[in-house]
Image (tube, rainbow, N blue to C red):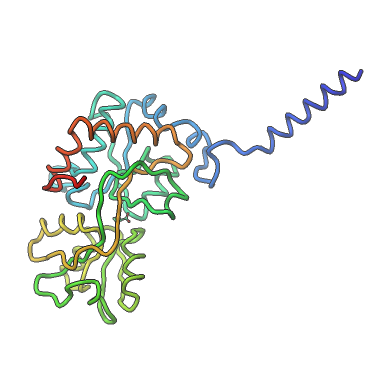
Length: 276
Ligand code: GLU
């Protein structure tokens, strides 16, 4: 009799426990399907036989889609290819999905993409929503202007100056903090912002220096001025809680650094050796 009672009490305690404990990985309400966040992305990629990477289509040197050929190219793209090769033994087992600065975190959390490799700065704010790999590129925010512009540095971005930036980027937040008097106009992506600058809708376009150098390559009538006024360390972003895949990606980054592949790609796209 006593035994039966204890048994029932234990069973009740266990079931109560089961109903109140939240599913692992469900924290933050990141996904409607808890399974997506609980199981490691690595297993999902292997099962599917394809890595789905969220990359930029609007950023020369990192991820730019050529409208003629339909090919997407850049440093981020080549890193995604190398990762697909490492996981699946074949760099073509890769799907590149376009993200913008604004859509990348929602797309990751919806399960649309396995990860973000898209000029994304590691910030404390973003760490609340995603996991970040180790730093794979060091950028800093700067200013792009038409050659001969009176703007020489961020100190010149004063009242009456129109600064163009992209929605969802750290660049918009940073320029508002550094140049609170200026007017900031926000665009959906970098090609739109650059088109607006060329059409005279603004006085300067502000974002990471590396992105701006890509624009100078597209149109040498523009130049990057004033050095950098922030640090923008890039990381690959992974769904919150997926520490297994984050660790895998960090090992991947170490392995391509050791093999020399990282340096080769860096030089190919950035045009110089990575700083140590
Ligand atoms: N690295 C900055 C950021 O993550 C600017 C580049 C971008 O918009 O992706 O916001």
